Each structure stands twice: as structure tokens, then as C-alpha cells.
Length: 295
Image (tube, rainbow, N blue to C red; front, side):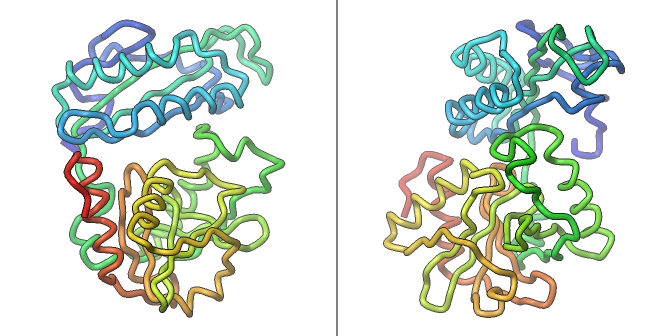
């Protein structure tokens, strides 16, 4: 299924309040979301037929829209119901859900005060974000030449489409050098995040260190992993982390809705071990999302 282009797939998509054929969920080439990135979205996981943390994702979607000056023509409950409906219609058991909101085609200039707001929700079966074989060994990251911008310059705490331009550039840069993903620094040169996931480090004493999310998205999975760790008595320290500190860390992993918990074995010349703590956190996270009793 992954080899089939997304515009060539079959099934149904929720589009502006209606369930339409996959091939009919189209927009005109002249739309504000495409040209000016006035678009917000979410990425949600389906486990055993249910969307994990749906309410939290929808709440963040509406927050992103508000920050972008977009008034969503539906309530949060209506979007939640629509997400559940399309998952059932598509008979998704383990997959991904993508709600997206964008400005339409009424005005084609910087200003878009009169543009209609469109909403669509698609879902498809989907497994691991990273190659499962690589996840077992730990993925390798480079350090991107691109940085997360100053938070005064962007709506940094949203999932707005325009914020992902440098993520794509960083990901392509990493792949061209033989890496799986890229570590991005913030505007001050501190460690920020990967291209689509938050990052954690384990020190020699067993404590976790993770960057303070003051210029990048505080992920829903990130928050859940912090809760799991604290429930296990693991100390979690949120702070500014400089790249040179990586030489002192024993372990490293990424977190995200797509990435889940993904071990990292290398960042540039820094090497990390896939330790028992990371494996245990992953087991507990998988138990949580599949509604089993976490260890």
C-alpha cells in the first residue's frame, strides 16, 4: 500500500462535512493554503480501531487554527465524530488519521480575509514511521544546517504547514548523507528536536533530559512519555541542552505520534546504546496505546 501514491488510492475521505470518494477529494491549484501555507493539520494514530488521544489532537488542531486566524466552521465534537466515522468507514485497525484545515480560493494574495475555510479528514493503514529493522538497531541522525526559528518570528507552538518546510529540507539533507533523520538546533544553537519528533537523552545515572519546548511543538507523545517515566520513578529534566553535552549521554530516543518511541544509535559522531530503560519505556507506551496494563 505504501508504494501507491496517495492521490491514486481508493476509499472515502471526509470533506467539508460529507464523505466523498477518495478521488473526488480535490482542491483547485489556486488556493491560499497551497500558495501561502495558510493551512494547519494534525497527525493521529489508530490502534486496534481506536484513535489514540483524539480529543487532545483535535484541541491542538483548533488551537493551531486560532493562532493562524482561521475560524473552523465545525465544533471540536463534530471533528472528533468525523474522525471516528471515517476510521470506521475505511475499516482502519492500525493506521494514521490526517485532519487538515486550509483557506480556499476566493482571494489569491497575502490577505485572505474572505477565503472559505475547508476541512478534510483522511485515514489509511500505516505501520512504522521508520524502517522497523532500523528501529531495532537505533536510527542515525545528522545535525541539520537548518535551525528552528526564533519563536517571535513564527507561530512555533502550532502544527502549521509552513513550519515544516525546513523539516523537509533537513530530512532531505540527512538522507542525502546516509542518515535516517536530522537533529535540529534552535535559533540559539541549543538542541531542539528531530524533523518530526521530540528528543530525549539518558544520562549515566538513569535520568532523562529533554529540551524545553519554547521554540518547537510540545508533542502529545512527548508528554505521555514524561508521565510514564515519572510513574516509574525516572527523573525527567527539561532544560536547555547544548550539542557538546551529547558526549556524556548514554542513550537517546525520539518520540512522536508517527515515531512513537524510536531509539537513536548515533548523532553525527556521538554514539548511544539502546538501553533497558528505553526498551521498557517503549513497552509501557505500546501497552498504553493498545489499552493493556502498562508495566
